[in-house]
Length: 305
Image 1 (cartoon, rainbow, N blue to C red):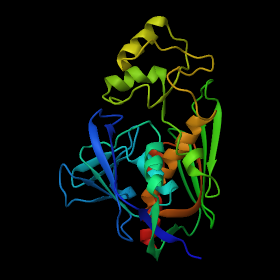
Image 2: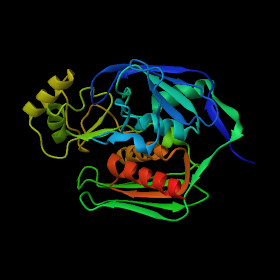
Image 3: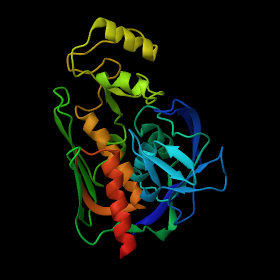
């Protein structure tokens, strides 16, 4: 039996700060006809300009994935794209009234919880899978990142992360359609190292970051003064470093939640191939740059066929 295309049953709206810009936006996920794919529309700029979720529109991968068309951008699309992919949604129109998708709790969970309350609608057309003719390897000497994409009837994603961190260690995460994306992947939040936060603030990144939407890894010893400063930055009571090396702002949902979040990102970035990929994806030390480069390679390969 062929899998039919699917869309959301009704419109769902979300509001919140963007992680990097700190700008508040209202985002609405709307039903869309068959073969629409995932499309974004900046309703504050041009109601008639649609930005398709395709790798050729990637304009930046600095800590998140940005899509740009005709000078109009949507920043940090990966968590939403991951949620829609994990829930099996083929078609949706995303309206947003500012430049960046809200970070919400740092995972895909808010989207999942909202959409599954009303359900997903099957449409009268078969799903169009993305299939590749041969194995593809994309790598980066600079970062040591490697992604291998192998044709397969059973899609799957595997991630290995290695930040040379004593706290994180070497972590792995896996997802395939036999697993519950909503719990196994979608709930896993973004993360940052304590020593990076000052740099990111000074470089106009994570302006919307707070202690509710990010796991903070405290790799190196920190002083009381540093913790006090961090508490002031986030405007929260005194923070502390836990024995496991994480800041006490959040409790981990999984011991390897950081690897699972990288898996979430990978699934979202790979939606930029233009649909559901029939392949096994194995990624080592992946990030948005190599993820989207790999998606772009697949797009080029398919266009050249």
